[in-house]
Length: 314
Length: 314
Image (cartoon, rainbow over the protein chains, first blue to last red):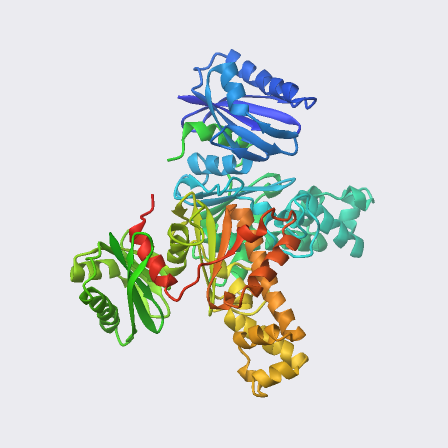
């Protein structure tokens, strides 16, 4: 059995054929042409057509991960701001085209399911997944099922951790994403650099603080810049607070961190663990196992989407 | 069909016979004699014996709500600090005595299940339950099931909302309970009264600030004391932050508040709603329905415990 996993992004469509062990048989991608619903559907089908033309074993079903809210039972993308979708019946549209059944999920939930089915949470029944990049997405698995609530559960990025903090697109001042996702890290980095400029940051930003990004913070911290190390430490502290909250509410066996911001040679995850042990009241007896890095790959979105159909929920 | 619901407290055992619609047929209670496991079991059985002696329709099963962590599958009270239990096989012990099957749950989870089965959440499939009293307990229902995680999920009271805040018994500085449960309200009330003494507070405390409790805060705020109204407002703000976090993580249809602190004629719940609308980013379109008061009764613990067996989880 194989499945197609489709990972919808704001600027591109990525898809792949995945086997029942989570192995990737083929992948492809195309730009998302956002002129209309029709051009976006064509962007998706372009990739799927090319995958099918490669002549792998005919896939049994299609899993679709969408950056927004979905109605899983109806197979509808209810709202996806980055692509401008409103109530798009994506599962039906793809079924009409390919004769394959489909499952749709929020991308954070699909990522969580991928980690549960094939990834770093394979040994657990309960996990919290966070992906830290331009935003912070998330998903929760409890007793081998996705926690969905009335639809949009698992929004770990938008929990309020610092009332009165920076305004996020979600409308909240001081949600986790506003502080600890890439742009939030860059904002805090710029503030810190403005107050206490260092030679390392000057060099990495060509002398213009406006060039400072979360990558600058990472690289400067790696080079030993104490100001940017403090910024990284603060990022870790906010994420550790998120872990404490998720631990109290979900009692997960592990918390899995993925996303581009985490790809720094394991420094940020270690700082998160250290802060968690300080903040959590009672230190976790096995913190390395409790707070984990995702088995990161550029194709984890595809695998998560395919996991929706390759390992259906009980 | 009827069930016995047993509500274990730190100082007393309450139990009742409940019918399948959540109606209470009889209740009784006794002090918890905490000399040993044996005396505590006898305290429980004293109440159950008296209920059975009343000659109601023979109950079909026993539900037990425990102030601590449980192993539901094994029927064991794993840890209950207030009564000093460690790995007590309560379901087996009661089954041996009465020949009735049993289900054990954390009292917050039982309360959530009671609200879902018979109470203010009867019209939903997803809810968050908080009980605000001497502590803050909680429980989560998602898709008609209790979110349990690896055992102790739903600890809404111990999420970290104010890092560096007051130390709680849980070991965390600044968890929700440390700020918004009765003792936390009293602590903030004393601080506020020390800084800005008012005639109302002086009168209500007989001139000694050490007499100030959360009831004083409630009564003084009701009489129009602006200092204690600010303390109540702050309580509401902390609880609203808890609501925002739970909304993002669980997407519940409603959040149900019970417990003694909420019994103030509806003022605190209204303040929580107001703060939620300010903090949540996008105001909830139906806030009165979203943030609800529990159908409070002195027997809600009994009904929650009985609900465990009267309406088993799917």
